[in-house]
Image (tube, rainbow, N blue to C red; front, side):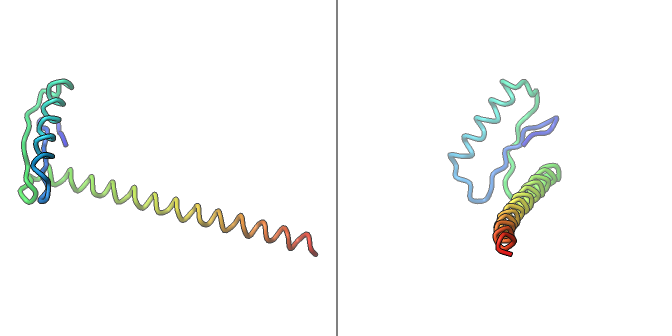
Length: 97
């Protein structure tokens, strides 16, 4: 995660050390090659500054909205499928009359 002043490397409680190391390398590359001109800060789960808490909350809400959207699309697809089956059955019955 990054802001205008910092790239945060957030480490969850069960994050393996190798992933933390890789995250530091990636953050360093972002700062260097994307010319971000910002510092890096390692943040442990449970010790997040308010700025990081806000970003994590926003990311969680975005993921939840995306999941609700995906769920709504699944429901819409199921309704569409059922309506198509109903329409097909209705046409068959209509032709029988």
